[in-house]
Length: 170
Image (cartoon, rainbow, N blue to C red; front, top):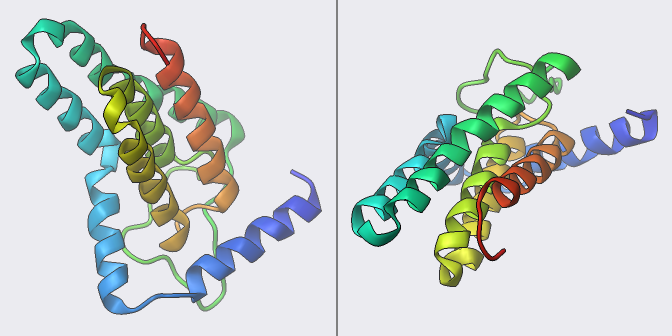
């Protein structure tokens, strides 16, 4: 990563960490990001689809499987890149800071993979799904546990996997 890009990353992260941080919003961000641990909210949504739509149960189960696949691919990239978590003087992370490397964001990867996969089966819900994935991703920098570029890379990785692994219209 170039120095200019690293400086921009830290500047944007500092902006995320210093603006709009009333306790209620921080608590809401922690609660929402917790539902994204290991892609849980996306897996649960796909399994609900499988339970409700028996005709396409196999496709719904495949969409559920896309999420842990994204998590595994993300973990491999983390091990290769080994970028440390952000540390800003005077601005510790809010909530639980993972001990794994930072790049790319697993929450972003699983959220965008899930949104893309589920959106293939529920095209009318694509917009809200992508918005939910974006919000999940943004909580990671807002809470100070990922640089913005970690989140962007995770979103791209997850989107690509979600689109690639799900058959049908995109």
